[in-house]
Length: 463
Ligand SMILES: Nc1ncnc2c1ncn2[C@@H]1O[C@H](COP(=O)(O)OP(=O)(O)OP(=O)(O)O)[C@@H](O)[C@H]1O
Ligand SMILES: [Mg+2]
Picture: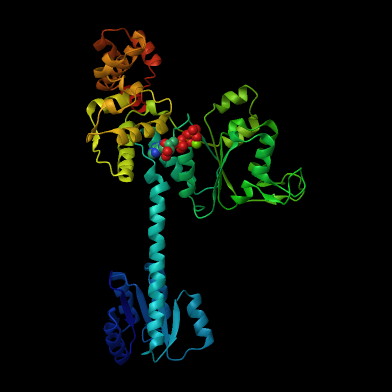
């Protein structure tokens, strides 16, 4: 463990020498300053774990040193010393942020104790910071992988909205990472130490959902024995994540609108209004605009939740993210299982990029997990992938027994078109020409095979 370092500030040479000898004997690394000015210089130059400063100094006082530390080195603990302590100075010292105020002379256990306490408090702070960094690593953006330009835009958006109270609507197909992003927003906000409460709105019948969200008072319905706190209240000060929001019933939608607008509600069967400070994040894999058009979703609620919309693109349109995510999951699963799998063969990677991924990132994660667990070689090859996937790799087309010719051909065809598109930077004229088909045929095939032009290529081509 690192030796603790301490700065001793006193303009009395005798005190300075005597105390620093004594401290060094205790195994503490000591630097000395004989004036306020010198102390500040030393503090700027190198950080200390602890500063021990006399209040009376010729060119200022210990409070100056304390304030300098607070500003420049907020992690450093400061203990002030005085020959003439009274209750007033003691209070002042603590208010100004000193860890302790000690009365001289000091060569006794009292000093040792104070130093021990200050240093161990520091250790606790350091430990907490380390734990927090680990948590951030698990849930923060570090854990959300993506280099696709739309994902990068999403990360920027998360950064700018995280620390506001703004309602965020996250949309995207199942498995695209909506829940993960909701959590990331919470973890990057100043609410991170308060609860993150998740409610799958589609999983509960209407009446249950209502009491789940808003709570109820005793006796409001058969079986309501005591009061129950709702999720909105549980998430007070933190974040509530309402998943599958499009399934909310009309009356639930009215209630939600009110909570979003007024931050207040009454529990089921109750008359007392409850006020909350809860940040709301919503998600859906439904097209909400469509739901509004169909009359399934209130327009006013739609406007209220659709202020900030994070739209997660399907995995099949994020081709560059596939290798990145695959490597991310491989590393994680390898660490968990200890299986010595090193990577993917070119054919396996091509198959991963050619597949349509109806289950998006979740499906990719499962596929990698399975491949790592079942794989017997250092490299994952198409044989380690599920049949649906492996078949889209041209080398395996022969094995597609029991499928129609059209099905068997779709995989290789998609792969060939994809590779040609990539080779020509998604320029369709050039691709069609090389493949010997006309442009309309190419369009139709791309549509059928789910090949969408990544937006960045569109931009590159168009200017
Ligand atoms: N960009 C990403 N980086 C790393 N992991 C991801 C990413 N996106 C999704 N995942 C992982 O994929 C899985 C599915 O993501 P998540 O549960 O957030 O999807 P979802 O959109 O909420 O799905 P559903 O609509 O079914 O609720 C999770 O294990 C998640 O950690
Ligand atoms: Mg989810």
